[in-house]
Length: 73
Image (cartoon, rainbow, N blue to C red; front, top):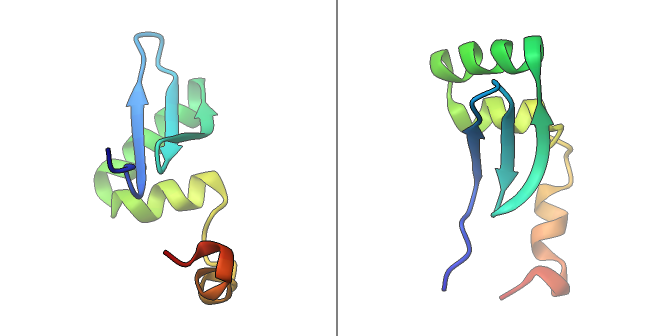
């Protein structure tokens, strides 16, 4: 079964937002931070917003990591 790629988020009844990356938990947002995230994700590109909120945004080593022998498929 293929692994999901990119970011995804789920909201719960109490307003908590769970963000996942490639099917694995990345971060959890609660209360005011969750509300700000939900307003921002609806107005901008969702993948970029989730990358910013999880801290996985433009580290500069993406090309290096992709070319590493361990990450080649």
